[in-house]
Amino acid sequence: MIRKFIIGLFSLSILLNLNAQKTLKIGHIDSQALLMSMPEMDSVQQKLKKLAQEYDSTLEELQVELNKKFEKYQKEYSTMTDLLKATREAELNELNERLQNFKIQAEKDLANKQIELLRPIQEKAKKAIEEVAKENGFTYIFDMSPNVGAIIYAAPETENILPLVKKKLGLK
Image (tube, rainbow, N blue to C red; front, side, top):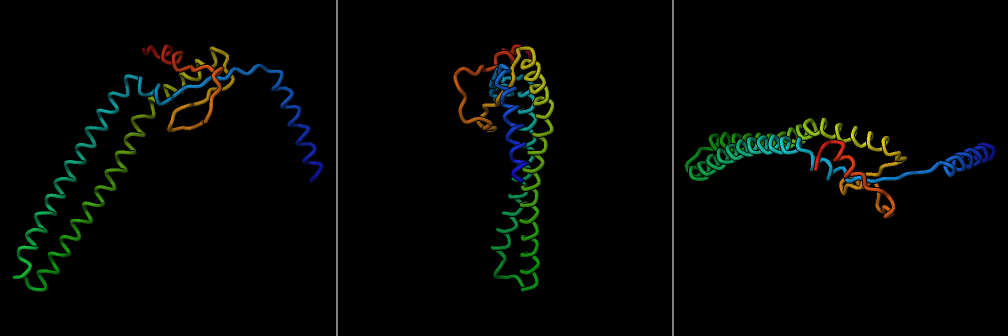
């Protein structure tokens, strides 16, 4: 075990020595800012907004139907037989369950649609970032997006390649 540890340390020191001799060029980018500046995002946002409005409309219809049936149930409660009460309660519970299931499924579907629509845009951005990194001799590019959080601190001497990638994509 000690032998493996020593061999590991030796290998690590060789790698560190090799890396010390190599010049590193480090850059960073806010990939979220890049994505938001791409014109394709407008179309994605419009499609997602339209789909969300359709789901909201259906949810509202289901809620109105549930409210009407519940009001009717409350008004007629005192004159109903036990069998009718049980039937209406089961109907209300079923409608409420349908509403909740639709809401959950709509949220999942909206999230899946967002992933589907964003994938080609993200791939285009990633390809442009890789091309810019290669063309400009960068060793590492770190994503500084708040949602990604790949780095907590970036030294001022790292270069922000967002302008270069935007230029590569023909964006302002």
